[in-house]
Image 1 (cartoon, rainbow, N blue to C red):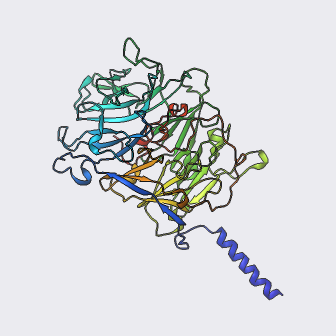
Image 2: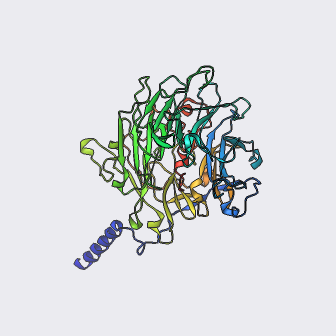
Image 3: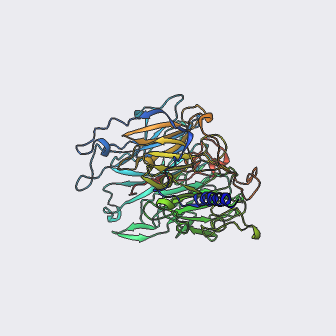
Length: 553
């Protein structure tokens, strides 16, 4: 009897050790893909325009058509989403040494059952090609039912206030017209507290004072320029939209209604309801170089005033060994979850900190490494999920980047998927209470010196098919993808994870937490919708330009 018991105990002990072991490259070669994983399906490409690049600016260093891909929602109200593609003007050189080239934003309208041609692109920006134009956001600032486009513009060689060596410029609104044209003859330039701005590169629109009209928040560097020297100005400026009136026209004032000297963050800003209060909050992201490891929320209270700058919570994600984060609804409860990625080698993990109605940022995150505390009424785990990345599971998967993409719901279950990266793939994990670490969908995106995989965006329904299109740049072209059919996407296979509320709970107060992905409900990359609903009007952000892994000007 004893001889049989000892081997059994050894077997049980070995099994427990295997279950509890730390993943290492030497010990594990686990395929991180679901056995039935599927690929995103390409349905078209755009190969750029016919610019004749100057010698030395050809090939991958040439036009860079698609260096940024920017969803805009449905600008011309035809029921199809539209988008902007950025390119370089490689046909003309500027600067003292003739080494500088301008960029150009080209607007493409959705087209039934097909893609537009590169020649269909409409330039958004000044007529001078020696310029750079930074997309800020869209919003219906005069409440005429047509979206307007806000940009930051810098002209090369501008010597205003003797500022030729600086990135001086100004924010400009291109007013939407019923014919779908955004003309340089129909714009408003905003004044600065200094004679001229250092060109602002972040903006967000939303109804900040509760009058159901979009207002504009511009976040700049905190510097302007005056008489050959930098001059301190507020970083944040709020401009009030008004029905039937355009800033700077017919006596309409175009001065800010509020100045915010030091808004937090330096990476991106969005306007969404974080705590299920029914009031959208300003959410700021911060970090150094390519990291996005700080989140700050300025909670708003729907009191008819402008932006409340006094009620702010902040977290530093380094405490959970995370270096990149996004707020998304991966549990399908209309609450924003914190999704992070970080760590090295065997410690690399994707983590989720689940949202809860009435829960604020610090409570949601905790220390970043908490366990459950049911005795004191706080649940779920913080983090709620820890998923090993492919690098941990298999030593053949290398080149992982600490980056996450908000591509929204691709399988129609009302939850945003988690999308990460491992060279040369975009990795998509379906989500919900049975979230697991197996890759369900992949898109092959060959790498490049300019981080091509960082351009992937969800554009929305750009062809009238009723299905969203995704776009990414590589090998000199913009490639347009659709999700595989729903029945080809693997279903959930993990264990059910408890949430801090009944599994069928949905926050009924929040209209700004959607699963259309980070470019379909707002302006740039996070939350741009192709609808005209109030949730869309209140949720236009400018995240994408600041989530791309390349140096910003």
